Amino acid sequence: EISACLVGSEMCIRDSNNALALYINLAHNSKNEEIIKNAISLAVSLKADEVASQLINEWAKSAPESIAAKVYLVRMNIVNGNLKKAEAILNQIPPNNEYKDEVTYLKSLVLIDMKDTEKALGLLKSLDHSKYESEASFFSGQIYEIQNKTDLAISWYNKVSEGKYYFQAQVRLTMLFIQQGLYTKALDTLNYLRPMNKQEAITKITIQADLELMLNKNEDAITTLTKGLVLQPHDLNFLYMRGLAYANIGKVSLAQDDFEEVLTKEPNNADVLNAYGYALTNNSNRYKEAFELISKALKLSPDSPAIQDSMGWVLYKLGEQEQALVYLKKAYEAVPEGEIGAHYAVVLYSLGDKAAFQEVVNKMKSLQPDNKHAIDILIENGINLENED
Image (cartoon, rainbow, N blue to C red):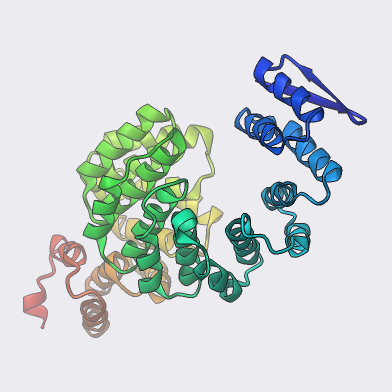
C-alpha cells in the first residue's frame, strides 16, 4: 500500500510501489498527457487519492489550455462533492469533438447531483450511446425513477447490459418490481445477478432474504442468510433476519440464539427485542418473558405499530383482554390490515363486541382478500368466519 506526504510542491513517497514512483517522476518531467493519465490511473487504483489529486492539480496548473486536464479536474471535484466548482470548470471547456461526449456525460452527472433532472435527461439523450450506452441508460433510469415514471425507469435500467453500473441497475430493477408487487420477477432478477465483489454479494443477500421473508419463503431465507453469515460472520442484520425466519416456522430455540447474539451487541435494539418477544408469544407459553422483552421495546419505540401490536397480543395471551384492546386499537388505526387486524379482531371477539369484530374483518377482506395468514390467526383462535357471516 502507498503512503504519500506532500511538502510544499515536493511529493515524498514512503514504501511506494516502484511503478507508481516511476510514473510520478515521469509525469513531473513530461508534457506527455498519456504518461500523466497513466500515473493518475495507477494512483487511483492503489487508493493513493492524495497522490492522484496532487497530480491532477499540478497538470491543470501546468497546462491551463488542456481539455484533458480540465476533464480530470472535473471528475476529481465530482468525486469530492464540489459540484459548483465542477460545473464552473465544465462551462469553461470549449467545444471539442474528441471530448464532446465525455463533457456531456460529466455535465449530466453534475445536474443529477444538483437535482436538475430535466436538463440532465436532455443531455443524456444527446450522448453517443456507442461509447456511453450503459452509463447513460443507468442515469436515465435514475431520473425517471425520481420522477415516479416507473415503466420508463425499468425500460432504461434494462438497457444497462455491462459496466460498473450493471449491478446497481439490476438492484434498482429488483426494487421497482417489488414496489409493483411483481415478486417472482424480482426474485428472478436477483437469481440471475452475479456479484463481482463482497459488497455486492452482501447487498444481493440482504435484498433476496428480505424478499423471501416477505413471500413467507422462510426456509429459502434461512439458506440465503446462512450463506451471508459464512461470507460475513456475526453480521447483526443477517442474524436478525434469520431469527425472524426461524420464528416464522416455529423454531423458537434457533430464533432465540440469533436474537440473543444480536442483543449482546445491541441490547437496546427495539426491533430485535420486539421480534424475540413476539416469537416467544407465538411459539411458546413463556408469556411473562415475552412481555418483558416487548415492554422494553415499547419504551424504546412507543409509537411503533408493530410493537404496539406485539404488546396487545402478549397481553391477550396473558388474559388481559381490556388492556390488550388499547394497544391493538392504536396499532390497527395506524396499520388497518393483515396480522394486526386479525389480532384486533380476535380480542374484539373474545370481549363479545361482534359488531366491531365484523367491521374489522370486512375491512381486512377488502384490503387484503387473499391474506391467508390473517384468516389462519382467526381460525387458530377458534373463530370460524363462515359461522359469523
